[in-house]
Image 1 (cartoon, rainbow, N blue to C red):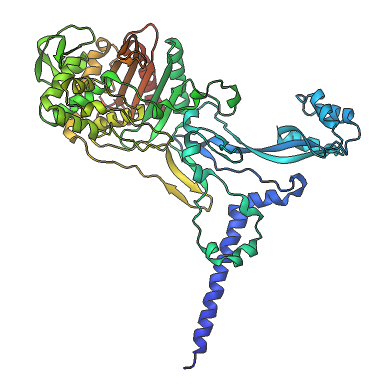
Image 2: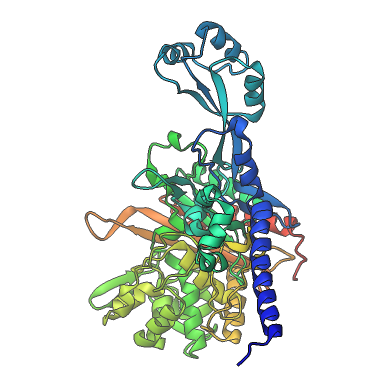
Length: 573
C-alpha cells in the first residue's frame, strides 16, 4: 500500500508546528518570565562564579482603592569583597571605602587584608546599590562588589505574624518560609533558579516530554486580603490596649463575616521580621490567633442562645427562675456575681446581664446531645482551614461527655478551649444568615507565567436558619444598646450586635482555675442586619480590671468608628 505524500506533508507540518510552539513557549519563558534573572546572569561585571542569585515571590497587601503595598519582597544590593593578594595599600583602600561606608570597621578590614594567601574575603554584605556603584567606580585593585539579593519586609511590624519570614532549613542550606504566609505559600513563592544554568536547546531536545509537561508548582506572587491602613490602625489600638492593662498577650481580628476575608489580624507583642536578631524569645513568632487555644467565656453565650432559638426550645421572652447558682452532678456553677435575678428572668436578660445559669438553662432545654451536635456544627471541633501554618484544633472533649456539668459550662464558654480564628468563624455564622464560612488571607495569586487566580469565597454549610440569625442579631443589638455599660456606648445611627466575655484562666500546674487571672474577650458585627465587618478582641491576664466591659469596650468602639469613617459606611437607623 502506497503512503499518500499528502499525509507525509501534513505529518511534517504538524511536527514543525509542535516544535515551533515549544520554542515560542520557551522563548516566552526566557524573555518574559525569567528575563530579569537571565539578565542578571548576563551581567558578568557583578557576578560571582557559580553564584546562585536569590529570588522569591512577593507578598502584597491590598488597599481599599486597589493599590498594593509590599509586605515581603526582594531587595538588590552588593557584597563588598577584597582580594588581599591584589590589594596594594590596605590603609589607603580602607580610607577610600570609609568615605562611602562610614560604618566599616578599620580593625576588621585590616585584619582580613593581611591574609595575603586568601583571594576572597567578605568585608560587608547588603551594601546599597548607590554605594556599590560608587565603590565600583573607584576601580581599586583587589576590591570588588558582587550583586546580592535578600528578603526584606517593607511594612516592618505590620501584620508580622501573618506574613512570617524565611529562614534556613534544618540542614542549613536552603532558605524557605518558616512562619506565616511565607511558609503556607512556600511552593508559590519559592523560585527554582537551578534551571538558569541548563543549556536552553539541550534541555528542549534531551527530554521533549519533560519540556512539554512539568509537575513543578507554578511560581508567583500572592495578594492578601489584609488592608494596610486598617491593619495599621488596628495594630495601634491593640498596642494601646495591651500597654494600658499590662496584659500577657493581646490579639484581634477584623473580618468580613459573609466571605471570610480578613482585613486585619494582629497579636501583640509583635516583631519586625527584618530584625529577628533582636528577639530573645522565639515564642513571639508563633501566631496565637491560629496556634493557641483559650476558654473564651461569655462570647459563646450567643451561640448557645442561637441553638435554643433554632431548635424552638426558647425565645427571647422565655423565662426561667434564676437563683444565681445551679448544681449539676454535685458541682455548683454561679453567675459572675452569684446573684439571682428571680423567677421571671428572660432569655434577653441572659444576654443583657451575661447570666451563666441562663446559658445552662438553654442547654438543658435543648438536651445535651443535640446541644453538642449543634456546637460541633459551628466548627468548634475542627480546623477552619485558614491559609496559615500550624493551625491548632480546638479542645472540645467536654461536649462529648455524658455529664450535664460539662455541657453546662461549655454553654457559657468555660471547659472548652478554642482558637481565636475558630471563635470568629463560629460567631460569623450568627451574622451572615447562618453559614459556616472559611476564613482566608489570600485573595489572588499572580503567577509568573502571566496568569492569575482569584480565590473565591466558600459560603459553607448552613448551621442555623436565616430567621435564627436575624433573631439572635436583634437580641445582641438590644444587649449592646441597653445592657452594655447601661447603654452608654449605643450609637444613634448604627446598629451594632455585640457581646463581652470574661473567662477564668486554667491553672496548668495545680489544676482548676486561677482566682486572680482572667481572659477578656469581645466581639461585635455591624451594620447589624447587613454586616460589613465582625471585630473580635481578646486580652490575656489584664491587670487591674475584672471584666471585659472595663478593658475592651473602648478599643472595640475605636475600631468600629475608624471602619465606619474609612469605608464611609452609611447609617442603618
